[in-house]
Image (cartoon, rainbow, N blue to C red; front, side, top):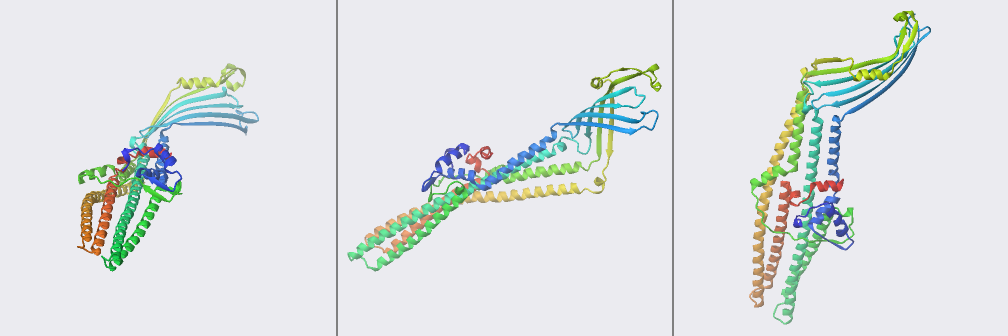
Amino acid sequence: MLGHKKTISVLSILFLFSSVWGQQKEKSLSLEDCIVSALQNNLGVAVEILNPQLADISVSLAKQKFLPQLGFSLFKRETNTASFSWIEAAEQVTTKFSDYAAQLTQEIPTGGNFSVTLYSYREDTNRKFQTINPRYGSSLSFNFNQPLLRDFGFKMSRREIIIAQNNMDISETLLKGVLLDTVYNVEEAYWNLVYSIENLNVKKQALDLARDLLNKNKREVEIGTLAPIEILSAEAEVATREAEILQAEVLVKNSEDRLRTVINIAAKEGDFEGIIPTEEPAFEKKDISLDGALLLGMENRPDLQGMKLDLKNKEMDLSYAKNQLLPNLSLEASYWSPGISGTEILYKDGNPLTENVIGEIPGVASDALKDAFNFRYKNWSVRLTFSIPVETIFSRAQYAQARVSQDQAMLRLKNQEQEAFLEIRNAVRTVQTDYKRVQAYKVARELAEKKLEAEEKKLKVGLTTNYLVLQHQRDLADARGAELRAIIDYNLSLARMDKVLGTTLKNKNIKFSKILESRM
C-alpha cells in the first residue's frame, strides 16, 4: 500500500531517479518506488500511452470538417482566330479574358453547407460593333445546400467526430487496463520478494535451532549423558536445513530478477547486487460485500467501459446505415447580385452599324463591384432534387452488416459482464478465505511455538527424545512459513480485488492525467 496516499506525479518520478537509483550495492525500495519505476520505464505502458495521443489527433482531424474553407482562383486567357464574318475584325479576332474568384464555404451541423462567392472578370476584344469594351463583370452570390432525408441532422453530420471521440475514450480505457495490470504485476513481484526474503529468514531460524540442538547433543555426549547416535540425527537435520536455505536463496534471487524485469531497472541502471524491500505486508481486515463489489466493478472496470463505448460506435454505425436507406432529397437555394461596367463606346446617331465612333466614356472595374455589393440587380433560385438510389431498393447489405456488428458488440459486452461477475465473486471470496487462513495459521504457529517450548523443557529433564524436538522444530518452521505465505497471499488477494474492480489507480491515488502528462 502506498504510504499516506501520496500522489504519483512527475515530481515523484524525478525524485525517484535522482535518489533511489543512486550507485550502490543494494537498493532499498518501497512499493511506491517500484510502482513509479514501472509506470515510468515499462515498455508496455510506453506503447499504450501513445494510443490516446493518436486518438486525440484523430478527433482534431474529424473536427476540421466544420472549419471554414477558403478558395481562390485566377485565370487568364488570350485567343486569336481568323475572321470569317464582316461583323468581326478585319483580319483576326483577338480576345483577352481574365477572371478571379474567392469563395468561403462553411459546413453546418444540420448536414448542409453555406458558401459565399465573389467572382469578377475582364474581357477585351477587337470585334466590331461593341458597345462596352473592355468589359468588367462582378457577381456576389450566396449558396445554401441542405439534404432533407439522407445525411440530414446533427447526428449524421457529427458522426465522424462522435466516433473519433469514443475511440479516444476507448484508447484511454485500454491504457487504464494496462496500468492496472502493471501495478498488480509490481505488487505481486514485490510481495513475492518480501516472502522469499522472510522465508529465507525462517529457514535460517530453523537452522539455528538445529545447530543449537546439535551443539547441546555434542556436549552431552562428551560428558556421557547422551548416546553418540543422537549426534547423527541432529547433524542430518542441520544438513537438511542447510539444503533448504540454498533453495530459499535461489528463490530470493529469482524473485529479485522478476521484480527487476517488471519495473525495468535495466532501462536505467542495474549495477547493484540486491533489492531490499522496505515495506512489510499488512494484515488488516477489509470488509466488502459482494453486491457492493459488483456495483463498483461494473462502474470502474476499464474493459467494460471500453466495450460500452464500442457498442455506442456500433449504434452510431447502425443509425448511419439506416439513414443511408432514405432517398436523396436536397434543397438548393441561391441568391446573387451581378454587376457590369466598362468603357462605353459612343457611335454616331447611337447606331453601332455605322462603325462611326464619336467618343468613349471610360469605366472602371470598381463600378461592377459596387453594383454587386449594392445588390443593384437581385436574382434568386430555389431547387428541390429528389432521387432514389437503386441499391437502397435491391440491397440493404450495409444496414444488415451494421446491425449484425451491433448485435455482436452487445453479446461481447454481456459475455464480458459475466466474466467480470465471476472474477469479482472469486476475488471477494479469495480475500475472505485468505483472511481466515492468516488467522488459522497464526494460531497454528503460536501452538507450534508452545509445543516446541514444552518439548525442549521435557528434553532438559530427560522426558523426551531429540527426534521429537527436531520434529517440533520442523513443525514450527513449517508453521511460520505457512503463516507468512498466508499473509502475502492476503495482500495479493487485496491487490487482485482492486484490479478486478478497476479501483487500483483510485485507491493508490495514481493520477491518470499525471501519467499522460509525464509521457507527453
